[in-house]
Length: 264
Image (cartoon, rainbow, N blue to C red):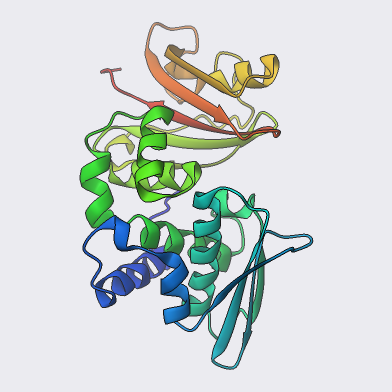
């Protein structure tokens, strides 16, 4: 899966144009609650049923509504940025959009392309690469590092990890799985010589399998056999990678950072 394909590059470029238009000089200046109204999409908070965010548009006016009980600031900000993405990217396509917390962590290229474009727009708007990349390159791939970056940029962990993979010099995969089956992945530029296995069911030697089998929310190991994830390796060999896996609370959705930090 190549998430830097041209169709999504336009969404990233639109976010960068907006950062330039607003003359943003520091991440602290990215106040999405002010940016959206400035671009013609005021925000309100209300009790929503069946979704966590909604955008309704009539002619040139748009209204973004966020579910009042969404507590985490990173989730609220991403919902607003996602819906603003629809306003700016899809004026003739999307007159009404509903989004939930599962959608804002969904970077599967097989989904509705407008939804994926809105996610990439939101990630770049909230974490502009010219600020984010120098910060990301100081940190090794781990969920501890992702939390540090997410706190600085006030973003969700999943979108932070996506942006990290696109910014780091380390050979890293971010793999999303659900109910023990791989759903989508993104890779860093330096990891492009590696390929995941064709088997979608996660291997029993992986941290993902351990999380689900033992009902845990986090697991990290530096001795995961490369063959448990990558083709061209034997799962019983002595060639290892580091896997850091995190499960979304109360679900079987797991994100794994795979770090190929040794010469294998």
